[in-house]
Image 1 (cartoon, rainbow, N blue to C red):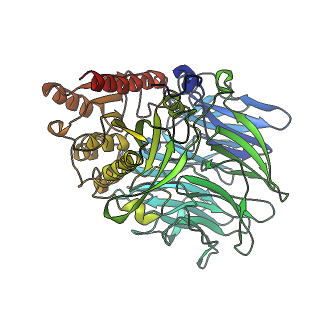
Image 2: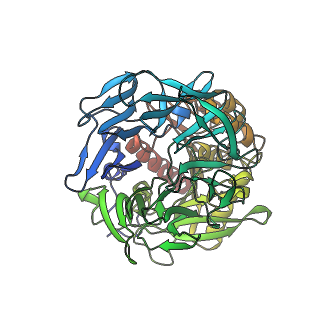
Image 3: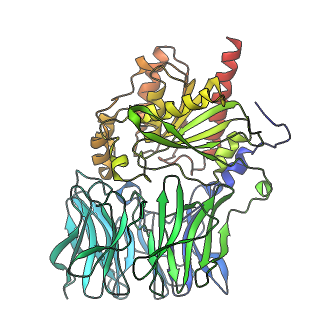
Length: 600
């Protein structure tokens, strides 16, 4: 299947080892902190510290996973204050005074979204009854005190000069659908009094509140159709700078920071427009100035010190890295602080994508990223792997993905599709998949495949579809009807939206309820093409039993399939220690289908 024998294949072990991820970047007292997850180390999240005079070093004990499972997806797993490190791991909340190797368990509570207030550690605690905002003194008592509580969901406890702010949404909502921003006075007894709603409601998502240096409360709202930055001065809410792009990420995790304040009064913001991110500076009068950077994908973790901003960025030729950007000059200076160092891939040739716009059903336009086979010429023709991203509110991102390069270096083209429901195209596009799941997303992926066939790029009978989580549901429905796809790979797949609504963690239950009503359950009697199922036995988002049942039903009908179960792996296979096993199985699946087509 190689188009150019001179191009070496990316080894599966190298693709996995190079897929290092960085998250939860924060700044404190001249230092930067972030979490680093290395797949070849079992996917454990290690806390890293960087100082100018010391460089980087691990400050959490070897093998200690700095993570939490608040709202199923976690976030805000550590905070730093007065030389102490507070972090969440197995067993609860820990505190370390020195280098991280003296961690002491201070509370067995399940907490996340850690932040520091006025002499207190603030956090979100999830219980069977709902959510609580809790506080604990940084010194003295080690008892968590409830600040406020809700039967629904809470996030972003932010203590300001005189008021306390937080976000809230109901049990029937997702934070990207309906999220409210509240403020209240913080009494001497440590409770919120006289709460007032500042923004948000059934048709507005107000997220990422943060007190500015001017004493105003800033937040991001999609009241105008895009998530844009707003400011509340205690009397009224005003737009800071209208931008036709998303100034926040879809809040799957807690603790996002899509904007931050510089010492010169400017605000730095990461903006998503389709599959691309860019960094902009918002001036005092609302002027918007782009920052020229070598990155096309920026994670929602900005951390500022003075006139510099630290970020986690990547591009089609550079995998994820932590960088420090000096914004004091007209030409920003970029200093890379951490990146995946992997000698075997340092000089590897990579496939760079082209952006594609395709007309799909009902007159809508769909975006896709097309990665041609590595080393191919302009008139390439190849087998194609269409990838439906998870979420489905996620999106395809313009960044180096070594697991995609694993396939392009073996003669495949990889195509990422931003189907209806994706983030990066405004609220209306994101909401339009509700009640149409398994229909419009499948149509969009099929439209992209049909376009590549008509353009002479894709080889007939050698177009495959793969998806993870919600994307796995899309992939399964794509081969449960006539279409261009010869086979499917479903990773951590959702099979039955109704049953999923009953088994999914409470955070995502509202999502399941809003999405369902389209194609319904994947029925074995409709599946027409070979399927590879890859599923972790410890998956608590999409339970493995649903996939087992479907696989048994396909076996009874003699439909070609394989069920690969990964012991003790959760919902995220790509970042697990079994990522290499999954990649090899997927490659073998496509090759087997192509071989069978030749011999039949």
